[in-house]
Image 1: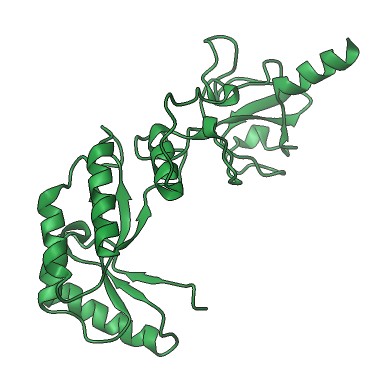
Image 2: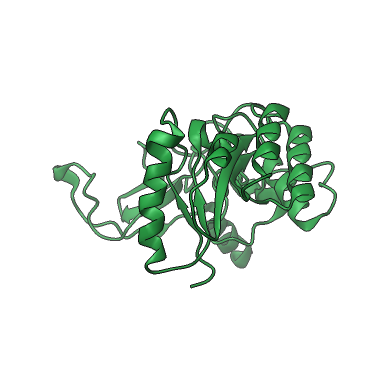
Length: 260
């Protein structure tokens, strides 16, 4: 399959290039080449930042590239200088970058991110953003509870997500940003249920990213996901099957409107 890209040794940390990282790549590349001539991206030292060191003694072979990872509020011109040096002899692919701190959270730095993306465009470096995730983190592109099926509405995107979408579409970022979709916002305290409570009456959950799933006629609970049948995490005394029917207030509103 020509569309498959191999990336090996993700973010080596303290290993030395000549002693550990390069020999590992040489072994794995030789194995992959027995089956495929596709692009192979090689991890570099210090969380895939030492591309300059790798470029001084590259792995022999064809269709190989070296990865750079950056997080805009942590990695700036000094790291770009390392990439510029490496480009004299090897190809670079930015397989992970974020708009925030290296932790994946913290402060967004969209100006520095734009500087990086302009740098990539100037040097024709392909890239992939971190992360298409609804985790409660600054670098996540999606708000907690956003659809897992794609096709996201503007109101499902975080500020980082709006920025990334605008750069992909080469369009201005929305200003002001839309309010989060009502279904994604945290309900007022007391109106919905916690994960340890029965949500069969409230039909909504206090914790973002959870849904009210019905177990039976007597119990429903707020969970991240639900598989019909017996949940192995349930105490033995309560090991009865879950229907996993989703209970929502929208159903009640629809019923009341029909009755009206």
